[in-house]
Image (cartoon, rainbow, N blue to C red):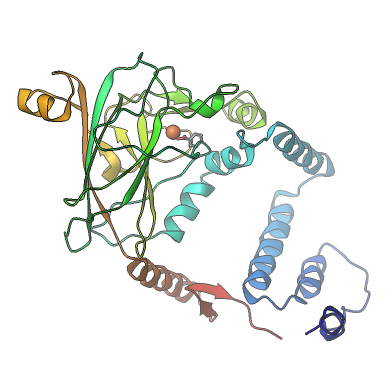
Amino acid sequence: MTADAELAAVPPAPILKDLTDENITENTVIINNQSRDRRLKYIMERLVTHLHEFARETRLTTDEWLTGIAFLVQCGKISSDVRHEFVLLSDVLGLSCLIDSMDHPKPKNATIATILGPFHAEAGEFENGDSICSDGKGEQCLIRASVKDTQGRPLEGVSVDIWETDSTGHYDTQYDGATADCRGIVKTDAEGQIWLKAIRPVPYPIPHDGPVGKMLEHLGRHPFRPSHVHFKLVKDGYDPLVTALYLKGDPYETTDAVFGVKSQLLIEIDRVTDPAMAARYGVNLNDWLIEYDFVICTEAEAAELKAESSRKYLAAKGLKLDLIDGLPVADLD
Ligand code: BEZ
Ligand code: FE
């Protein structure tokens, strides 16, 4: 269809009427309904309905609304290629955590996902045994992990992307003109294993010198995350796993500013006590040791779970909607 024909095919707009706090929602929904994209139509209909209901319920004032707009402007102003204030906002509101778990449901025996955060960046490729940290100040920590499928079979050639802060609690991207550090990608070997030298993770505050930090302050919340290392596991045919391992007993374990901690991802950090192990991995006795067995599921397993959870949710709400790719969509009028 040409652009002109497409425009001509758009249904007529609703007739003009006096818009009030009672009918503005219906009218906005009608006018948005001209879209031919069923998913977009559904998302916009729900967004407008909930947004308007939020304003009605809170009796939102013009001043409060303008304060909200000014806050978003500040978020935009401080944002850059490396400063992702809107990701932070989504994280501290618990929205990232909610969306991640809905979008990447995992079978019971697979490793659970958690938030990506704003500090994932391009990383170099490393070989098993390499060190990904050059700051030389942290406490050396051997990371040893296996990757299996949900049937327990080791998976070769999984790309394992690892990132963490340096010993001062800063990611490389937080330094002016910095180069990649404390991050790297390694592929699993024929036994589905990876091992790298890194540093013992430390707790750190999320960037809190901007509007999101101010918001936390107003809410009486601290900006800290418990000690953790991030992982992103990717292999063709498998649902990407974005996750992290958290040190058990960290002071911020139960009050993570961004709600990333899950009990399945809490680990005891050990020491390398076996001289044979130290020799095999080229580390020192008493270096720290993080070990974990990851299990990833196939795209098909994840897609089935996602559709099932959409169906369950809609049924519980008494809603009858078509699903496309496991997601609810609006009817086309
Ligand atoms: C992180 O763990 O890298 C992170 C996550 C959310 C907000 C800030 C940092
Ligand atoms: Fe982090």
